[in-house]
Length: 246
Image (cartoon, rainbow, N blue to C red; front, side, top):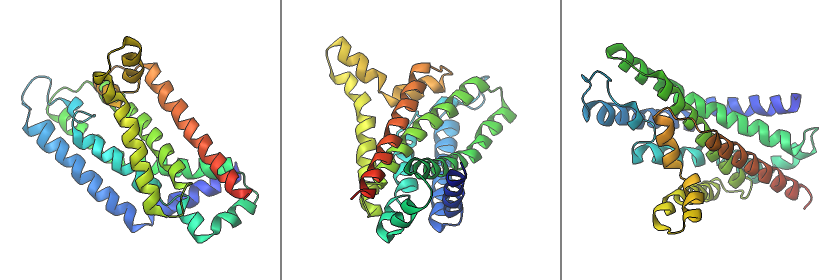
């Protein structure tokens, strides 16, 4: 556990002391603030008894998905690519630490910073609660969906980071893989067979967030995020092991 904790704290410090991370935080909050102020407040009646519909904030717009599709590559592109480029991965692999501990430590640091990005958005729900009634069940479910999908996207990004010494290439690979994951669900409307529709409907992330935003927590969605996240972390570990034996 000590090597894992050391890796985690090292990467977390790198996030908070990196100028890029704070630039990401600025634009992240700027875009989310736009979604909340313009789409949730101004385009809906805030005087209604139920208040503004927060489900629009949780995956109800294309802006939401663009944030997630870009935030994954940005947060993960340097995690292993920089180690590969600088050659420090050889030093790391000869230290008393396993590949799995390196992968999990870096992944948890990225996930922690990802959650830190979303933390200020709790203010939006507080502002609405100040003016009207808020059903906190869908709000908490919405954040659960954000956690699950974000965890999966970061695992994909970490895997891509293990494939290239270039951060830019790693970011491009991550974005392409995330677009592919996101597009799976959209194929549901183009297919004819019931079985195919059911399979691709299960992978439809947009529908997932729509359910979470309405307060529906389906355990099948959580199992999908968990299993897919573990799968990509496993692939990342194997990629590091393969490099170690080259």
